[in-house]
Length: 355
Length: 217
Image 1 (spheres, rainbow over the protein chains, first blue to last red):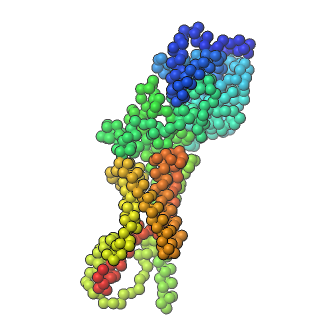
Image 2: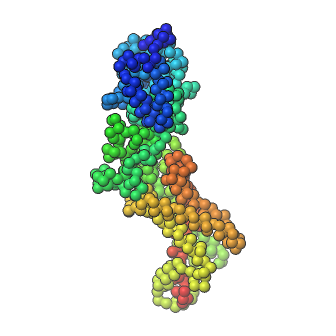
Image 3: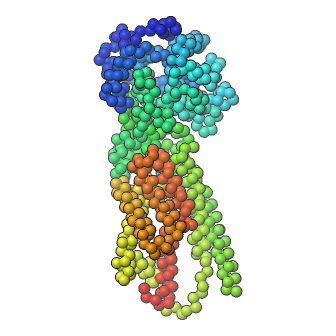
């Protein structure tokens, strides 16, 4: 980690990459891939390359709260040649529980130093929800509650990137009955730009692509849930390779039937692709190998708010989100009783008329 | 709770409760109504033939009216067949019915459903234009006619917009579609839409009455 003085004298990324043996060709390839993934115009790759090569390494503080480390696993456990390793050449990851060598007080000291040295300039990445019930005692780091740490670090951040559905929307910790009072970053921080990159976990290239965009062109265009439009602008369903089967009305009825074997649409076995916005169907996972629907399982909608509380993953979208038909049966009985009553009243009225 | 969650959850449940309660109220109430006692001597032993015959022969216009009503009749047939196709033969709708009743059957390709939806919209607009431009029809039309027309058209339009990704994001249009269907559920038992249940029984009842009196129709 650099001191304030070192920050002023820091070499550019271009020089840093050359000294680390990264060729110009590899660097341009990275920029082109990111620009392409974000559907930026062709000229953007060149502009991105120029901006990145002139930039100093961006200080990043990564805070992990109520989470499972899946997001960190996702961004680090990718195949070679990895965009993710390149992006780590572009940023100075000054604090990250899982990845940093330091521990205990030294680790917390590193965070405080980074905050001081890059005041107002660092990017804060958060993964995990923040428990706020009982003053946030349900998750602490070095005796500091997640709630307090988020407020302290967010105060001097340039921007916040909420990585994963837990940080973006509360995720599993927030799922009913939400015993710790978990909330999303955006529920607490209101005065900083926040980019949400949801997913359980998010796609690696989405994380790195968004970071590259922030470093070069600033905050990307966001949708109503604060997600970058480039990756979350279209639904899984619209980009799904099984979409033609939906249009033809050919659906798998079970995971082991003939329709499933023929690769038909998984809509009837609960796929949430039509109401889920993410890049899984285009960017895919494991270096573009596959994504859940391609592997035979419907989308569970993990990049959408409160996905865990929207009923069974295996209940089709047209089906209701309510438990039993007791109310309907009671309504039938009540309606019949009212009908008998109405007929009785009509008879009384009729008799009076005849009398 | 999002709009879609509301539409799929409490709004759906309550609209179904009102639909079922209201429909039972209308059916039971109507069945128990006491008609005036028919004191005439029956002209036939069984009235079943007349009942069945009336159900079917009223599906076609009388020859002397045929030319006059052929246009609205054709429009109405296209609209009703279209509604049947869209409501009962579209995959997601079958899923919905299966969730409620446990019954399911094969679906038609989506393209045929979209075509049927477009036909419904076109015929309903044509019928409304006729209603508004014909002085007699306009005079006898009530709020119940216009509101039932709108409540029937809304689910078709919102459904087509949802699948075509027009107007708003898919989940918003899907929620609006469900809410418009739920409005139809609530409106159905207490409006002219209830003819979907009463048309055939009332024709049969009328046919049986005529048969008993020896009226040949």
